[in-house]
Amino acid sequence: MRNDAVNPPELALEHILTSGCLHGNCPTMYRTNRGTFVVQGYAVTPEQAGVNLPAGELLVEIPIDLLAGVVRILDGRRPILDAPVASNSVN
Image 1: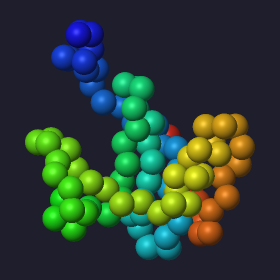
Image 2 (image 1 turned 90 degrees about the vertical axis):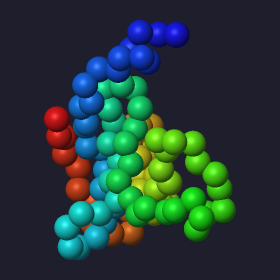
Image 3 (image 1 turned 120 degrees about the vertical axis):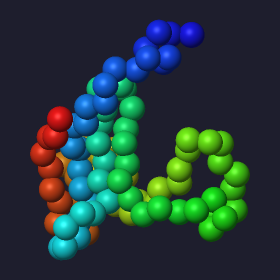
Image 4 (image 1 turned 180 degrees about the vertical axis):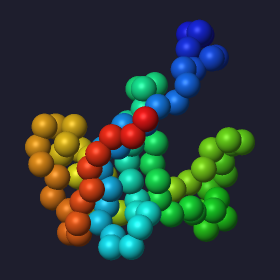
């Protein structure tokens, strides 16, 4: 097992894309310094989804256009979203 899997580095986020909404916090994708993504979205309970989750995992719902926009960005293209988009970095 890799040492960083046991003791991962302190989490740092880079904002990739926010799905458009006009009033504050919206579904957002972040890239981490750990080679992963963090997703901000709408909480879905395991009961709502009909799935069993192991301890420590959560279900999050995001708009399809957010994921499609992130794929476009990672592919070097401009995102196409139905609503306004925000893009900046946070640490």
